[in-house]
Amino acid sequence: MLVSATEMLKKAKAGHYAVGQFNINNLEWTKSILLTAQELNSPVILGVSEGAGKYMGGYHAVVGMVNGLLQDLNITVPVALHLDHGSFEGCYKCIEAGFSSIMFDGSHYAIDENVAKTTELVKAAHDKGLSIEAEVGSIGGEEDGVVGMGECADPDECKAIADLGIDFLAAGIGNIHGKYPENWKGLSFETLDAVQQKTGDMPLVLHGGTGIPADMIKKAINLGVAKINVNTECQLAFAAATRKYVEEGKDLQGKGFDPRKLLAPGAEAIKATVKEKMELFGSVGQA
Ligand code: 13P
Image 1 (cartoon, rainbow, N blue to C red):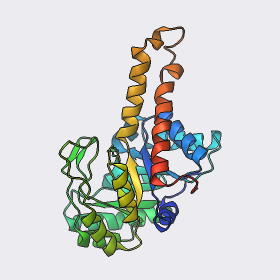
Image 2 (cartoon, rainbow, N blue to C red):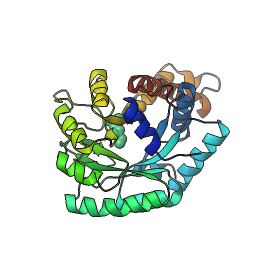
Image 3 (cartoon, rainbow, N blue to C red):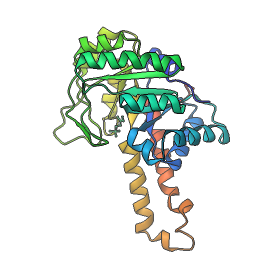
Image 4 (cartoon, rainbow, N blue to C red):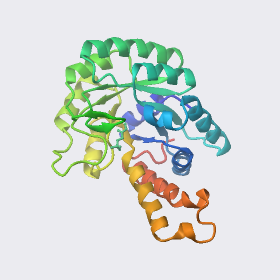
């Protein structure tokens, strides 16, 4: 059964580790992530962007697939199904469809409007037992056609949003989605420290987990990050493994064209990436 992400992230913050949010795109992705979480006895958050939700057929299809896998694969570790960077309308759709957690990304609104919309969604989510993440300071890079510049959040605005009753907070600290450019200046630990001091026990979320060096990840966890989002890294691992399979001509040998064979190396590559991240984040054995 799906659970909200509130308890697992409170535990993570108190225990100085982070739970990974891994974004899903299809059945292979979902199965690989769930099996790895179960094998490592780790809590996990499945992230679904609005684009990925649409790609998979819609939010009901996603909920049906995930719930079916939890049952058929006997997954017993805590799993949350979370809308990633949701719009105001998207949040309502996911609450209705049976997600267990949502993120409202109001970072592109003026702070007053972000506050008003977040306040309304906190009530809607909590009335149905879902957890809710909010964002302050837009996260750079491109996601679903939305390009952010990677600003650093204002700690006072973080406090204002945290006080609305949200369950965890994404604060921009110079992190960006996708690969980091050569001239990236690294995470702003000064901002993170200031945000944590203002927001106390609130679990903080680090987006753009792909390509952040291990020492920065550890430092961010020490400064209150309890949820780390990883998307691109699984995509790159899947694509590289699939490329290798095809370049080696394996799809042309026997029944190598069978999708169950063609997609198998990619699925294994996702498992390896998720395992590496769970070990780095410290969530192994914390279910
Ligand atoms: P990456 O694609 O950079 O790993 O970022 C994932 C993310 O933050 C999803 O919200």
